[in-house]
Structure formats: structure tokens, C-alpha cells
Image 1 (tube, rainbow over the protein chains, first blue to last red):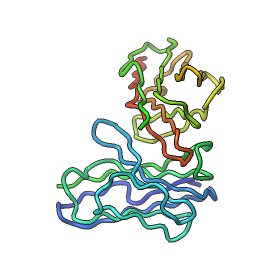
Image 2: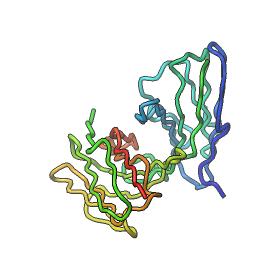
Image 3: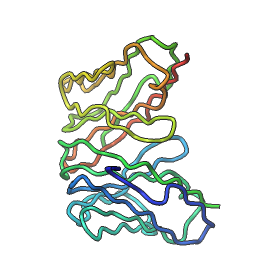
Length: 114
Length: 109
């Protein structure tokens, strides 16, 4: 069984649309993350949630809104998509929101904005 | 924020060769992880190693926390080792990992 899963795997959409990416982990972890990987492979953290509470919010446009209905799910909703939002978005989880844990990554969602 | 530098940026090897990848960081850290991103994009955790030495098969890693660097050793490389190797560090105690730019490894048959 997949530990961290994301849907969809690929997402192609027009500028200005609103889209969501879903993430689920079955590891029983308390903490989940969203990362963005750009075309140059740079990986940067966007958000993290611990037990449904937001604990990290990097300088991300407010068009991006994470939602955690429970600690096993962290969804990412993006409003008014722009060309620069094209990237691979990774979800990850770790046992706790501390520095002492290994992070496990999902397979990624490749978003292409036309 | 903390700076993470990885070297070399690119590395091409013949199958069977050994290699060393380096990660330098600018501040003391609570967490250091090495990841492999395979050609299909999957990020796989190799080591959690804020200090000391660990080995897993042909891979091993050493972190010298006092000197702010970590090394990833790959021995007897195989074509399946190809991909991008990332070092990620955290000095916030909040799970906020900062990734290096990666080393792209190509292993030729």
C-alpha cells in the first residue's frame, strides 16, 4: 500500500482556473507538508500542518490555500492559476513536527498551466 | 535562513565506480536527510543523519555536525543510482527542511 498518495498525478489547466490537489497518508503521522519543485529542480517548502493546525506558512501567494480535514489528509487549493504556478507539487509527512524525524514524500503532482 | 550547498552539481560515472557527494550547511542543524529523486520523479529518503555515520548497502553517509558538512558515498555505482541527490537540513525544530540544489548523477553502463 502507498504510504503517501497524491491525486491527480498530472494536472493541465488554463490560466485563471481554480484547481485542487489531494494528499493522503496512511502512516499515522501527525505532520504533513506541501513542497514545490520548479523546472530547475529546486525544492521549497510551502506549508506544513501538525494535527490539522498550520505551523509553517512560507511566503506563498494567498491564492494557495491548504486545508487539512484530518491529520491523514492535506489538500492544496489554488485559485486563479498563473503560468508561474507550473511545477511539481509534492506532499510529505513525518511522525511529528520537529526536526528529528524522517520525511516521506508522495509521488508528486505535475501541474501545467497553459 | 540557513544556506545549503551541494557539490558537485553534476556527476557522470561509469558503472562500478565510486563517488562522494558533499553537502555544506551554514548553521548548526537538528536534522539532516539525504534523498534520491529517481528519473521518474519519486523522492526517496536515503538517510536521516544529523550526525555520525550510517550505512545501507552500497550507500553510506557521514555528517560532521561541528564542521557543518555531510558526505554521501556511493560505491560500485549502478545505472539505477542515476537521478538527483538532495541534502535537506532543518535548524528550526519545526520540521521546516531547507533543500540544497541537488547533485545530478548519471551512471553510464
